[in-house]
Amino acid sequence: MSAVGNGNNIFWHNCPVGKPEREKLLDQKGCVVWITGLSGSGKSTVACSLSKELHARGKISYVLDGDNLRHGLNKDLSFSAEDRVENIRRVGEVARLFADAGLICIASLISPYRRDRDFCRELLPEANFIEVFMNMPLELCEARDAKGLYKLAREGKIKGFTGIDDLYEPPLNCEIELRQNDGVCPTPCAMAKQIVAYLEEKGFLEA
Ligand SMILES: Nc1ncnc2c1ncn2[C@@H]1O[C@H](COP(=O)(O)OS(=O)(=O)O)[C@@H](OP(=O)(O)O)[C@H]1O
Ligand SMILES: Nc1ncnc2c1ncn2[C@@H]1O[C@H](COP(=O)(O)OP(=O)(O)O)[C@@H](O)[C@H]1O
Image 1 (cartoon, rainbow, N blue to C red):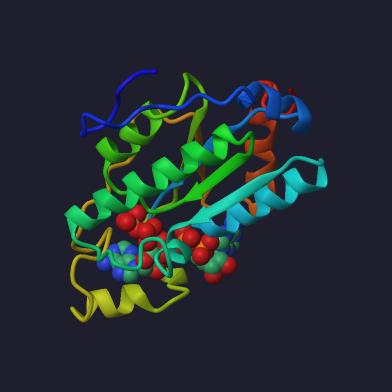
Image 2: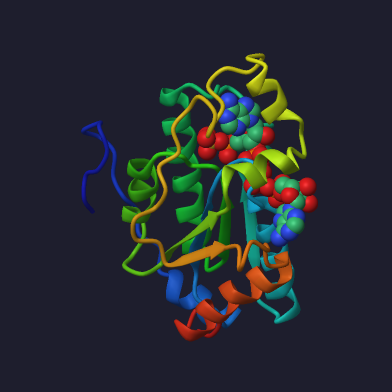
């Protein structure tokens, strides 16, 4: 037993059934597919499409969507820089648990700061964090404006909106970059299949 955490009286308890045993039952390897990008870049759509593709192949995944989590686990958090850091930290920890459970955890959050995404990467064993960059131009995201938030941000009715008056730091070394081809955005299904191909190649779709 080893002492961990900030307190002196906290101990880690090991369980004889571990990640490898669960992965064997599930015939897959637990990992985190972390989808980052601007609001409206298509993160949630690709996350759901990926989950559907995996389900069709008999693989178990779970989507952690930033918007949805802000209805519950993260309902106390705002969009200040400090609260975004805490938002990503919490989701990173939850994603780690899902991956440890043997699931393919798909996290789709703006996660604008490089440092926070790297923090989440460090929580996982080597290669188990797959960063997917939705590299869509701001103009496209703004033209979509599915929730009308860009319009409000341009009118100054929302302050600190990512890409307008708040920072987005693109990944420097992501595993997968999804972008337009000749000015055309691939379909969600095509992008999901690109991620599935990566997971297959790296051996995540078998125990
Ligand atoms: N100020 C500001 N900036 C960015 N986004 C905003 C803001 N206010 C509300 N929203 C809505 O919140 C969704 C993003 O939540 P996230 O948890 O993914 O954001 S973050 O990772 O903490 O930056 C985001 O959803 P998506 O469009 O799905 O990205 C917006 O709908
Ligand atoms: N590949 C795509 N091609 C065309 N439209 C898309 C695509 N992906 C998403 N959309 C549309 O763009 C809007 C934003 O998508 P969404 O998945 O909600 O983005 P995000 O989660 O990054 O905010 C939605 O109206 C969605 O239908």
